[in-house]
Image (tube, rainbow, N blue to C red):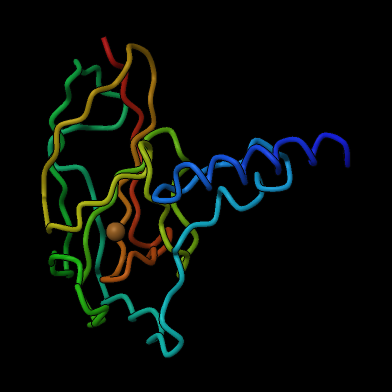
Length: 168
Ligand SMILES: [Cu+2]
């Protein structure tokens, strides 16, 4: 371990010296752990997750559970008793407001209060979109519509809806 470290450290010094304007990645295991730090931190005084109004629910408007579909697939997102809004740039949270998220083959909901991941299978519609077109590979896929608040916290299973589709 120690011997392996000495050489790259020396190389790193040489590289930084020659090219000080860019950040160099050292090829050592010692730096690998810092690679995955994500800035998902929330402000210290975060309002609690807003209550879910009575009768609120989300659903796919145009695709039924078990339906055979083709890709690209257009999806229309429905929500009752909640208002779809753009994500709040200043983190302001209001009751009865949020935006849609689409989970592709990623379970039937995100636990209530958990910040929804942002990646290729957890798609945020923070612009307030109520429809989207997605590309899916042939075969069976589960699609979950998950509502979240202005700072991307999930409203949990109460505001999630999952369907399975068969892609031609
Ligand atoms: Cu979001």
